[in-house]
Amino acid sequence: MSKPSTKPPSGMRDFLPTEVLRRRHVIDVIVRVYEAHGFAPLETPSIEHLSTLLGKYGDEGDQLLYRLLHRRDALARPLEQAAAEGRTALESELADQGLRYDLTVPLARVVAQYKDLPRFFKRYQIQPVWRADRPGKGRFREFYQCDVDITGTTSMLAEAEVCSAVATVLGELGFEQFTIRLNHRELLRAMIRAAGIEEALEGTALVAVDKLDKIGRDGVVAELEQRGVASAAGQALLDILATGTRDNAQLLEQLRGQVDARGQQAIDALAQLLELCAHNPAGAHLQVSPDLARGLGYYTGPIFEIAVPDLAGSLGGGGRYDDLVGMFGKQQVPAVGFSLGLERILVVMAERDMFPTQQFGPDLMLCWLGVPPAAVVGVATQLRAAGLAVEVFPDQAKLGKQLQYADADGVKARFAGILGDKELAAGELTIKHLESGRQQTIALAQLDRARLTALASADE
RNA sequence: GCGGGUUUAGCUCAGUCGGUUAGAGCGCCUGGUUGUGGUCCAGGAGGUCGUGGGUUCAAAUCCCAUAACCCGCCCCA
Image (cartoon, rainbow, N blue to C red; front, top):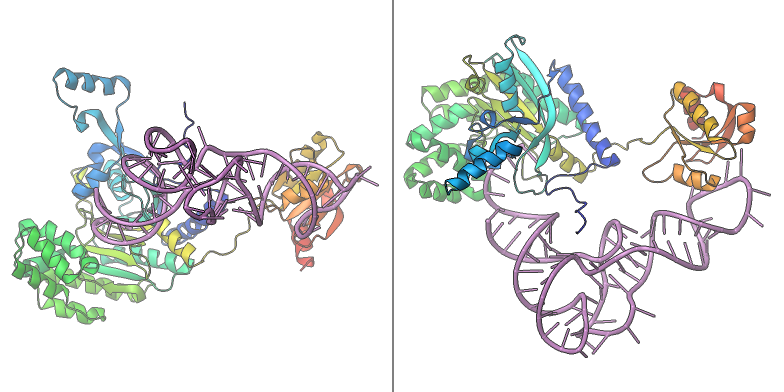
């Protein structure tokens, strides 16, 4: 029998210590900023009922859901049944659970389930999601999303708050050039109506529009035609979308003249959001983008997407979804949210070398020779009680080997503590600063974090 | 799902026209005698050459298939 592969499955990754520290650095910033905006943490299970997940993301999304087979008898029964009937078992007979595809749908489920949540439920959620997608650059089958959402209000203040949160995060991480592209689902619909495209083709039109910056104007017209949209209507739609100017207010006014009353309402909403964001960190990054469509099916109002130069995909996206909670219960609860893609952020930060140099490794590696192991354990315990992060060298070895290990890549203790029979007898420890090599012997009782810090800075 | 590329030691990679025992650098281990690492010196371990077939006296090298990974496209965070 051949040995199992030691690689993780395609699109999934192991995170070794340095990588975990980088991820943690980013997550720490996100948590701090989200909490500073008044969001509370939420966690939900990795697994949801398929009925919760299906039909929320569009056909593509349904295809990409990881499904979990029934266990034991529940799996065997439908297989036997189908075999007896001379057919293949249906997917729906074999699975009724799946891995979550995003964090928005679980939130909607939670809001529908717990009726005593605050009237405005502001939650953030940082957890992995799974998509049975083909992996690529910055694209994985298991990846983290970092969502902020506000439920219970249709106020544009909620949009402004989630935009503020993500813009602040990116700013604190060191991103300067990023754009929050902004559009409105109802404005898109109005533009499609104005172009004379029938309502049944609205969905396909949206998908095609979303590709504008990739396949170009002719490509979109071709794709629209292929899917039954008359060339003239396609051209008309693109003419509206091409309404172009960098100035957001001016752009909205130009669009206003081309759409009906409902479209104008959407424009009013966007104008109001821009006005609010003029007073928060998002304002400087917002760019009205009539061609922004976004794939997910559940958006109803403003939609956002974060673009940075030199990354094909986005760093995150979001929007308003006033009907999603209602799909789980009788009550309609409006909601808006924004999601940051952790791995996308990490990919760009790695490319641009945006990580601060991170201190890791213990404060002190306890190296010992000629003393009983029980004494080593005792000293380590005493030092930890004094607030130091202490690692003990586990084996009996020459002092040189112990020091070498203490300073090795992936270990990187700041100090070595040398415990020999002399130190033990005197109740002392020889402290060696590994970077400079300087050392001195100090009474154990006097060792604490402050003393070590003083030792380190004395060397500089 | 489509096109292109890669696959040889833990890592980065050489390997000629097919030719004996497959190499280097880094890393790792041991030693250079006592309780002091990073430099230096000497030695050592570690490879089914992605996998399976084929051609050949002989295959890391040529041919076919297959898998994994990477880069584009599509789609998304």
